[in-house]
Length: 302
Image 1: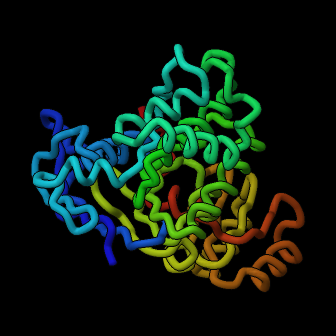
Image 2 (image 1 turned 45 degrees about the horizontal axis):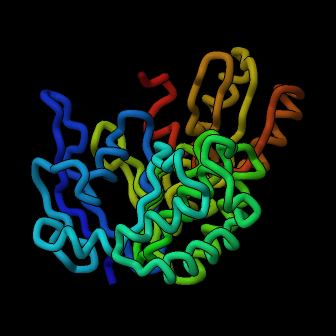
Image 3 (image 1 turned 180 degrees about the vertical axis):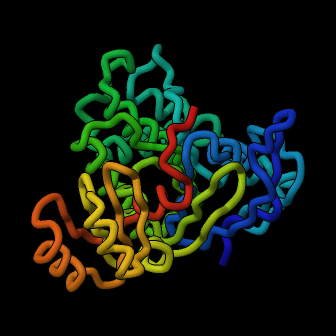
C-alpha cells in the first residue's frame, strides 16, 4: 500500500524550476530517502507534501487522499521534523510537547501522558523542566523529533534531522528511528549524510536540478552504477594511467587522485601494487557516497 503518491510534481520560482516534474511513491512501513545536493529541490518538495508551499502542477496523495481536498485530515495523520528549530523558548521541554499536542485537540491528560512517554523514549526525562535556551543542539533535535511524534502519526517526514549533531547524538537518533521503523512507522527522510541514508533507507531517490536521477534500494543502486569496490590511487603518474588504460576500467580522473570502479577489484589491485605502484593505493567497498558524487558531480554548490 502506498502511503504517499507524488505524480509530476512541479514548482518554479521565476525562471528556476526548483521541482521539475518528479514522481515517486512511498510504501507503508518503509523508510524512503530523498537525497540531493544543496538546491536540488528536496526541501521545496517536502514543503509541498504537507501543504506549506503551493505547487504549480502535479498530483499529491497521502493515505489515498487528495491533498487539495483533505489537507486537514492529512495533517492530523502526519508528523513533521523540519530543519529549523521551531521550539517555543518560553516553555519547558515537557510543556513544548504538551502544548503542541493541543493543536491536535488531544486532551490535556492524554497530552501529558504522551509527553512523558516520548521524554522517556528519547532520554529527555531528566531535562523535562528545563527551558529550551539551555539545551544543546543534540537535545533540541531529539525534542523536535519527539514533538513530531506527539500526535502518533502514521507518516513521519524528517528534513535533515541530524544536521550539525555530534556522533553520539546522531547514533542515538539513528537507534530511535530504527525502533520506530520496527514499530511500522512510515518515514520520509532527507539527509546529506550518506551513512545515514544507507543505514535507514529501504529505498531512495537522488534528485538534482529538480529531477530524479535514480530510484531504488541503496545497495542495488551502488552495485548497478558504481560496482562492488573502488580503487583509489593518490598522485597517479603516467605509468599508472597507462596501466589502467590497458585494463579498460571505469575510471574517474580527478588529477591528483584517480577512482577506479570495479565489480571485483582484488586481482587488479594486486597486479597494480605488485607491478606498477606499491604506495598510495587503497581498495575499499563502494558506497552510496560514490554513487551520489558520480551522479551529481563534485563541484561546490552555492
